[in-house]
Image (tube, rainbow, N blue to C red; front, side, top):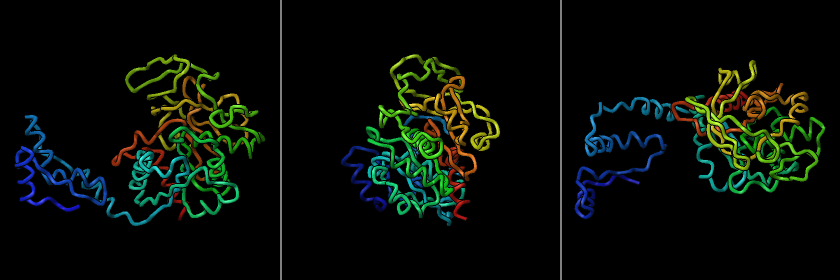
Length: 334
C-alpha cells in the first residue's frame, strides 16, 4: 500500500539473491489501468528487455496515459444492474465487469454496477429491485446453471415494459426469448431445456438434442468444420448480420466474428412466432440455421446475443455492443 524504501529493496536484494536494480515496488493504485504506468516508472519494462537481451525502441505509453486521463475525468454516472447467478462471487464476472467499464469510458461516464441475484427476483419485487437502474445486463449463468430462469425472465419483462436498455448474453438472451414467448407470443408454458426439459414449448435446448450440427467454425483466417454431436460450441464463428437492424448499425458490418462457449441454443422452429410478434432475429450463423442475435422493435435498446462479446473488449477498444449499451443507458438517463 506504499512504495518500498531503498533500504528495504537492498535487504530484499541481499536475502533473495536478486540484483538490487531488479527489485520493484508494486504499489496499490486507484485504477488497474495505472499499473503499466507504475511499472514503467519503476523500470520493470527496461529490466525485462535487458535480461532477455532484446533490442527495443523507447517505450511509448501515450495511449495508457490518455486512458488514465480519460478515467480521471469521468464525471457523469450510469447505474447498471447485473442480474445473474452466483453474483456474490464478483470475480466470476470479471470479463463482463471490465467490458462494462470499457463501454463507460468510451461514453465519458462512470458505471455503478450493482449485482442482483436472479434467484431473488420475483414479479412482486422486481420493480423495487430494478427501478433505480439505467440499464440491465443478464449474462450467462456461471457455475452449474440456474435452477430456473424466472428471475431473469422477470428482469427482461420489466426492462421491456418500462423501456429500460436490456442486454442479454447467452442465458440472458434465452430468458429474453422466454419472456417474450410467454407474455407476448402466446406461449405461456415456454421454457428452456436448461431449466425444464418437460416444458410444452422448449425454446432453448442442447446442441445434441436436434439442433443442426456440422457448424462452420471460423476465424478471420480459415474455416474449420466441427461435427462432434455431444460437445458445446467453442471458438470464433462467422455471423451474418441483418441489414438495417440495430446490430448492423452497431457493428457497421454485414459479417462479424464472435467467440462462443456454450451448449444450449435457441430452437429455430419457434423463432418465426417470436419474429412475427416483434422480437427480430438480426444475427445468424451456420448458413442461417442458428440464432446469434435477437432485438426488439420499438424499444430504445433491447438486444440479446448467443456469444460472449466481453472476451473481445479492450480498454482502448471497447466492444461495440457494450459501447452501444452504455450509450443507451446514458441517453435514457438524460
